[in-house]
Length: 369
Ligand SMILES: C[S@@+](CC[C@H](N)C(=O)[O-])C[C@H]1O[C@@H](n2cnc3c(N)ncnc32)[C@H](O)[C@@H]1O
Image 1 (cartoon, rainbow, N blue to C red):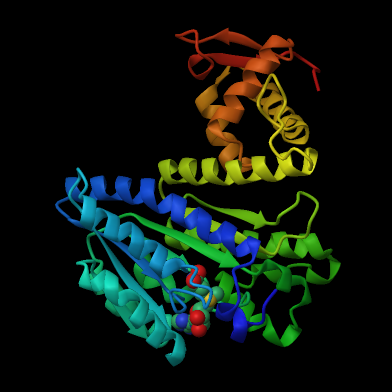
Image 2 (image 1 turned 120 degrees about the vertical axis):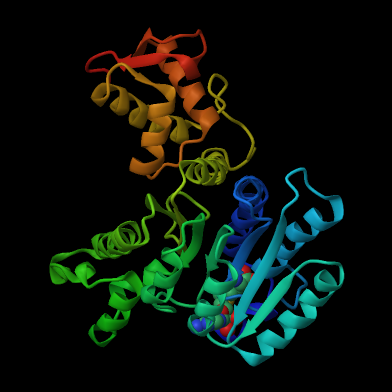
């Protein structure tokens, strides 16, 4: 892992590529959805807000988050879009050297007609300007500080009052949590929005400490920000490796979670395929299209779901898995797994209007797992 001060001088590590690849992929379909929402509600702008923007590009020329969003915005300017909305950017960067580079790197986009505002200084100091500017249109906010305690939850509260869509992608260096010094407790509470993370702290193991802290953050977002949930994806390159960080996603919209889940599920599926078949990399189970360990995990979760929720639909199973399992089961994976479980008699079809799996209702055959 590069140190903070040389982070932008070196090539991106693979874990950072996952963060930026996910953001890049998600921006296209989700801004399109937000654009339609904006148009239907008398708005013509969707805002991308990058609270911890960096210089936009590293020394190797690889695009960081603000330029990834600028590229998406430029595509809309150049090629137009049927919903006729504008994707505008508000980037904030604290370090003067990074800020200057950010300005230089954004200039070609601005010259090409993309609206980009770069704010110098602390994100917290720009929030009231952002709230005023984005009142009405939807906002997609990216929070990507160094370290775990890089910003305070209360900073976001003025944004929570808005009625337009607000979705937040956040990077959390959760590995630092179990090792945090007691004198930093107040900072952790400020980051996660309450001190509930400290309950029975001394009795918890490392994993429990991480979970309890992330759960506290999730509770703050759901209670005070009216988000439906926060999904945390522990980013690592191998199923057994220690995650480098967690990629969090908060939204008030089930559609956003479905998209996010499908993208993360795709990454997970590839990671498991590589781990199961290191030589071929691509080989997958003939019947399901899934690698062995991925299929086994999804099979167990799906079977348990239909044991507990008998006579239920594909859609309910999918939405339940998004919020209650850490597996990020993709749509196609769920369909293929249910088909396979029906074939081998572990799950049976109990009704539904159509023939397709997505229209059917299913129950687990008792004691199958
Ligand atoms: C991890 S880097 C961001 C990388 C960027 N998101 C990307 O993907 O290209 C964090 C950046 O946030 C800046 N930063 C740190 N604290 C900040 C704050 N309170 N407000 C605004 N920027 C801050 C740092 O100078 C650094 O450039």
